[in-house]
Image (cartoon, rainbow, N blue to C red; front, side, top):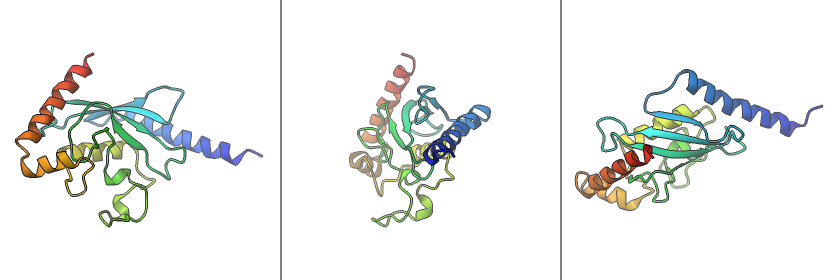
Length: 176
C-alpha cells in the first residue's frame, strides 16, 4: 500500500503542474506566470502588465505566488516584488483581495464566503482578479491606508504621481 501523504503530494503536484500546462497552452493577456525553479512547484513568479486605460498602464509588475502545501484547499499568497502604490497592496507588497483570503466566513463581515478562496480557483482566475483590482481599487477595506486615502480624496493628484513613479521604476527594472 502507498503512503497517503505521498498520494496527497502527488495530487497537489499534478494540480499545480496542470495550471502551468494550461497557461503555456492558452496564455492569458496581461500577465505571464511560471515556476521560479523547476524543482519547486510551490513558488511561482508572475509579471503583470499594467492594464490599458489605467494609471498602471505600461508597467511591468513582478510578484511571487507562493502555494501552501495543502493547495487547493487554501489559497496561495501573492507578494509584489516590484514597488506598487495601490490601496489593496500592503507597503511590503502583500496583495489583499477577497479571492486570496482563507475560505469561509469573514469575521469582519466585508466579504461573502463565495467571494473568498474556493478550491476551483486557478492561477488564471487569481491573475484576472489582480488585474481587475489594479483597474478598480477597493478602498473600503485597504491594505495600504495611505494609498486608499489618496485614491478616495485625490486620485489625479498625489496618488497618480506615486503610481506613475512606480510604473517608471517597473519599466526600468523590467529591462535590467
